[in-house]
Picture (cartoon, rainbow, N blue to C red):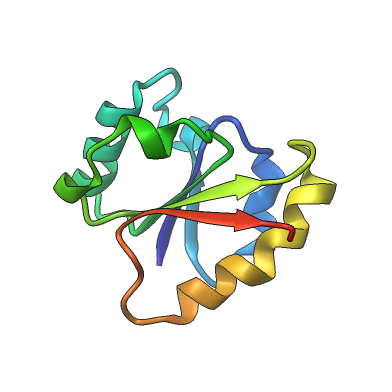
Length: 109
């Protein structure tokens, strides 16, 4: 799978997914992009999923235009030590041949 880590997440999260092709927003030089532009670029560049901490994204976009899964990570704080606990839940989705389109809430509950 080809994954993108949003700029609001720690870049160390890349280490949790060594079996996937994974980039950060900074790696792609897509810093400061609006969400709609970002999703279009992801589609144009054959990305499968976005990992983000942006809880508003799921309400701001029309996901019927995109074939991308957006993992919205929900934790008490936006630190690697907390977010890495969500990795097993994300990996369960990534094992599926067909992932859901649009937002998927991943929480520590």
